[in-house]
Image (cartoon, rainbow, N blue to C red; front, side, top):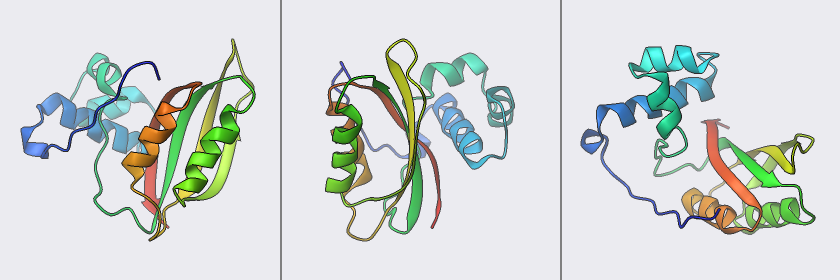
Length: 149
């Protein structure tokens, strides 16, 4: 990513209602309880434009994700070695890869989803995400879903 990403841990009560709504909409979409952004935004009490403005910038925090499966979504450049480097970061953080799906690149960009099992010895997920973001060729990354293993 081209920008330097910073993260903060903030209590939910300190967040504006719109950001809590976006987090709720993300959770509804990731869980499969709703099928469209429109449904998620309506249930979360926010506008679709608010959702699209902040959807990539807020995630629910779990202080212990051990025993969880997570799915991450990435947009990566279609260049040799980017996927290998990304998988190397995941392996280095000791997360277990369950599934990988990569789309056929369009206009030099491929969508990638990876499901991971988080174990007791897996490094901090936020740190893993930061390491992946720092890789050349990774345009976007976000956690799309979580569930108990």
